[in-house]
Every structure is written in C-alpha cells, then in structure tokens.
Length: 252
Image 1 (cartoon, rainbow, N blue to C red):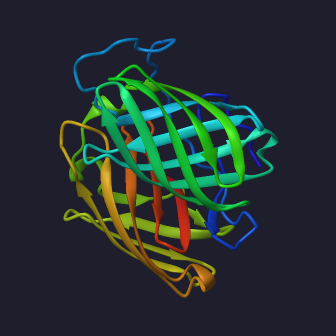
Image 2: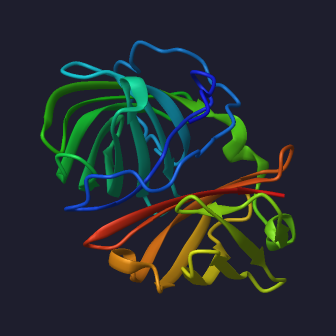
C-alpha cells in the first residue's frame, strides 16, 4: 500500500459491521489547512461544524481522521489507525449548541458499533472532541478546517470520465454524466449506479446516493457525501447504510 503524507489522508476501506478485512485501498483528501486552536473558550454565537476536517486521533490508539460534515450536519469520516492496520468509517450527525458539539452515529470496521464524541468547534477553524469509536474508548480527536470546502460545488466540476479508478483491487470504469448520474463497473463484476447532487453550491460537499449490485456482501443502497479537488481531479466518496460502508477514491 502506498504511504501517503501525514496530513493528506487517508485509508483503505469497505467495511460491513461484521467484515474484518480491508477490500479497498487508497483514499486521499488534499489538505488546504486551517489554523491551530486550543479551544474556542466562551463563544456566544452558534458555530457551524460544516466543512472538510482533518486531524489526529490519540488516546488508547493513535491515527489520522478525515471528515466531511455537510450543511445539514450529516457526518461521514474515515479513521486510519497507526500503521494502517485497521480503519473505521463513521456515519452520523452533528449537534451544536453554541460552540459545544456532539457527533454520534454508526461505526464500521474492526470493533464496529457506534461512535459518540463531544467537545468544541470553532467555525472554519478547529474541531476538538473526545469519546468512543466502536470498541475504542478514551479517544481524543483534534481536527483543523480544510479550505478545500470553500472551493464550491458544481456538476460541471465532477462530470466526465475518471481514468484512474479501481474497486476491490480490480480495474474499474467510472463516470458521471451532466445530470450527476454516476456509474462504476469493475472487472470483478461489481456495479455501482446512482447519482451525485449539489447540497450548497458555495461549498465543496456533494450528496451521494448509490446502489451496489453483484458486489457480494456489499450489495445494497447507500447514502453519503463526496468532495472534489479541482486541482488534481480527485473525487472522494464515503457512503453507508445500516449494515455496511464503502469508500471510493477516483481521479481523472
């Protein structure tokens, strides 16, 4: 597996709740940076958690985390634990009261279950939480805002054929048409059909709805989020349903 820069995320995954093997490799979020912050202190105005966030996990285990939080407060994250030995996918929602934030939902991967994290958020700056992911408790997570989120979204950005695509270790054809309909067909026979949609054109987060067929235990319908890096032509997708999760990274 390729070793990626420390802050250029991320990981390897397609997990069901009972699946213990990694079947997809190489997801990469570019990093636009933010600024470090020890905590927002007393904040008397609501702080939006929306954005692309990246940072570090410490506590009982260490690793890297990358999250997309949409304007509707839906949350999708990939956590890569130190050494790349295991990866978790998170799917849930954020709740904010002024600068206090809680993140809760489902966790997929080794030790799967739920996740519950709470702490503080400073809009477009920092997100610091602590809590539990699956069976891993006592975790501390510190993330910075990635300015990738400020690039905006448009179907014209993401439409086209992606020549660098693979699924479950086999080559794949992946494309998005002018209306946002997406299609993937892997050499293994696995097929994705669905669509990518605009959530808020001011921000680089897309809604994703896909159905997987002929993909074994992963067959089913998924909802998630995606982000696109104009400079590199990379599209990153994180999606989940109650039983499984999928992560896909493709480029032009």
